Image (cartoon, rainbow, N blue to C red; front, top):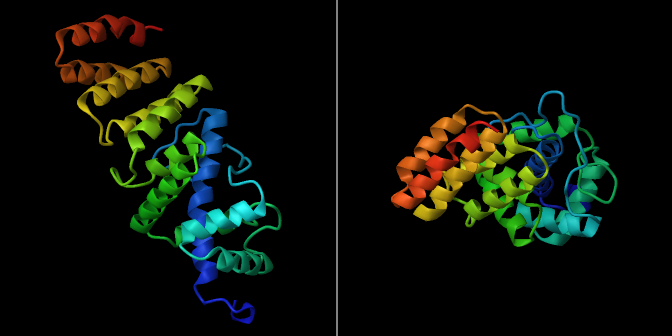
Length: 239
């Protein structure tokens, strides 16, 4: 890096930023396309799942700009840093910021402490949300970030859950909704999320649906709403 006129930390900072971002992208693609349940402590690549194409910005200029924003460096520095990382065999050549091998990415992520990873995922979710990226990818970042750090997380998770259900992945939808129940929301939104979670768990044949319905009934202050939830019980449990 010194031969290229870069500061000593530019390459590593860019690599760490890309590593955290692409891990979530790969996991989200796997989960969305295969209906795999993603949890906050999920493996980078779920067992038995091949690594799919990462949902990173198309075009190297857009990819470098996104990487610079995540790393907190200037775009010009990120461009030079990306070239240096390609030359070192860390990043692959191409029109996306992708690692040369999954092992390289896992090694870099493994050197980032869990608390720093959480903060980085929160930042990545916030930046991706501003760019209107795939809700599933943003939601996967949120799953790995501390609760309450991403503004609008509840709405993003609900949107990602809807997308997952439309793809026929109720277990993934339940994962997003379960986290949504922990994020800040109004009492009515929280209740609606519990009902949606029970529905997703029922579709996934998850016995947790029974407990979730009980939580929803307990949270309902309006008698009519509570009655609606009670009536929906057979539909949720016996699909």
